[in-house]
Structure formats: structure tokens, C-alpha cells
Amino acid sequence: MTNEARVTGLLLAAGGGRRLGGRPKALLPHRGRPLVEHAVRVLREGGCRHVYVVLGAAADEVRARADLSGCVLIDNPDWAAGMGSSLRAGLEALAKSADGPSGGSDAALVSLVDQPGIGAEAVARVLAAHRSADALAAASYGGERGHPVLFGADRWADIAASATGDRGARAYLSAHEGEITLVECGDVAEPYDIDTEADLDRLE
Image 1: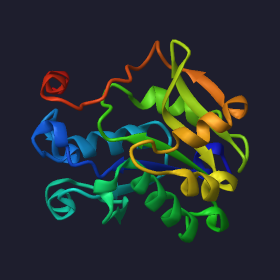
Image 2: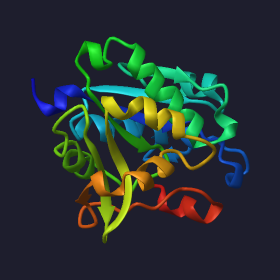
Image 3: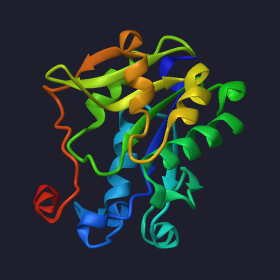
Image 4: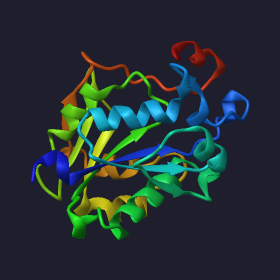
């Protein structure tokens, strides 16, 4: 089995867009379709055969308007508590599923729905850093750690336990800095976020 077959894409797409007037980020228009569709396509084109999507704000509307066929959809009722709750929900669902460690997937490649400047090539580079169920890797941009991030399944429980508020896995990554394989992606991707009205100009 290839590295790619063992890595599941985990897309965090629950944000409510508080600084965007309450517009859910998953539904922001990009290239004529909801942004969440673009993010799923990037994971698949980068080599993730299975994709899990964590939904929160306007989850029913996202299901109705976005084509997420073939994805495993996870509802995070605590999405307003921050990204940490979505990361926990996603990792816990992966651990329990047929595509979890016992079913053939021994790593998760985590990406964020509001980073359209990160494409399939960056995903493929980080995915290639997968070596074992203890893997820990992240894209870097000019030496600065960013997304996507790859977590081996042996680390999921500890990462989930440390994920709180909007920090996601930052506390865990800081505590394990020396174990992270950094994969430079600054030549193929831009790690900006769509957070404010001004950022909307970056969408097509």
C-alpha cells in the first residue's frame, strides 16, 4: 500500500466567519462554487483518496449547496468554541472509522477551508513526508510552519486532548517542535487566510 493510500485528508470547514459578517467560510464563493468544494478537490488532487470534512456553521446549508459526494461529513456542534473543537471532532471520527488506524489509514493530513492559496502541490509535498503512524510533518513558508499538517495516528489522541479554542494543534506542535519534518512549500503556495472583508478580494 502506498503512502497516499494510508493518509486521509481532514478538512476543517466549520468556521462561522465572524469577521465576515457571519458568512460561513465553507460557503464563500470561489471560482463559481462554494469554497469547501475547492478545498476538497485540492486534497484529492494532492493524493488523499479519502477526505473527511468537519462542518459546523450552517452545516445543513453546506450539505445542500456544496457537492461533497464521496466525503465523510462530520458535524461539530461545538464549532463556535473554536478550531480546536473541529480538530478534535475530526480526529475522533477518524480513529473510530473504518478508515482509521485499524482500517488502513495511519495518518491524517489536516487543511483549513479558508486557505485557497494552498494547492494540490503543497498537499502532495507534505503527504510525501509520511513514513509511519508516528509521523509529524508540516508545510513551511520561508521557514515558518503552516498548513497542511500531517499527523500520524499514534499521535491523534494526544493532539485531540491538547486542542482547545482557536489554537488547534499549536500547543502540541510547539511541544514537539524538534520532531516535526518541515516541508518547504513557499515556492508553490501562499498561506493566507480568508478572515476579513478585505481578504475576499483574494477569492475568484
